[in-house]
Image (cartoon, rainbow, N blue to C red; front, side):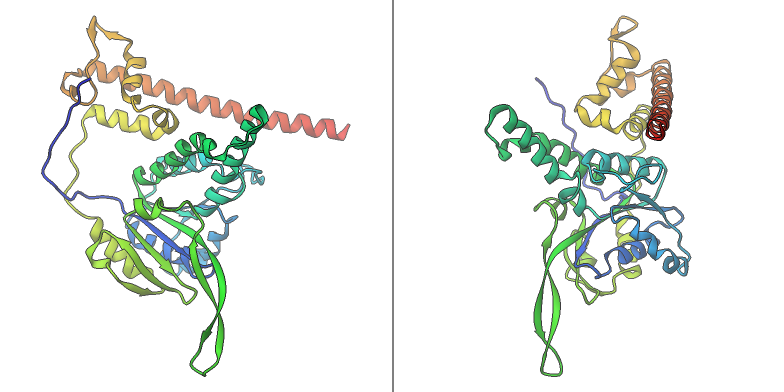
Length: 353
């Protein structure tokens, strides 16, 4: 098996920043994320994926005074505002990020990711269910082996954050305890102390561009960053100033122009994220499904190293195939919605009888 490699000069291109804010409850994580987003969005829009039962909307009047409006996707309810039994399912979180990206938002705040790890339907509950299934069939529960099923989906969630074509700000809760801290009067004041984030260790803090811990005193300390101007910085009520630094840091050389084939494949990745995440060879799979195993008795060119061999006729065939797939997916979604409505009506009739 041969491998193809490309060596290029090191160049800092324009990029979307991806950051983590974690700290105790009441420290101001959501407010800080919104004020940072107010700068990062420039002329675009911001959407909050809310796992706190819509609590992020409480800041709407405050942000309106800063001439900022934002939208909210409440992950805890369905499209009819009905509460869900498993709102924090990993695949649901992945789909939510893809959905927000597809709507063209400039900034996405995932507020917060701790429930995706530890609460209803999250990774740990999923792990327990997988282990229980294994135990029922073999009478030997093994949580370690259950990770083999959970890990791929968890990695997809992390990749969804890293690859989204928008600025990503993620918040995390932390485990807390109360300690008696000496005060200026010579006495002691009970103070909340943050311990560690409620999330899988060595994941987001390693993967994202920067991380900040925010205390109960609303002071944020940068504890990891690739941006030199942020190293060892401390911010009182972090917000616009931090946003300005991040916005400037995100600038760089214009990224290389995408080819027509790249643009088509980028649309496939945006519209059908599940299909793309199932296989490392999704590009070739999509092209083969559009053009057939062969194209006019010739082998289909490699989508990475033979892009110049794709004719306009072949590209048009790919566009038509993508359009058909997109229309089919939209129709299936409508059919599923109608089916849920009919099922709910039938259930209500049976209840009334």
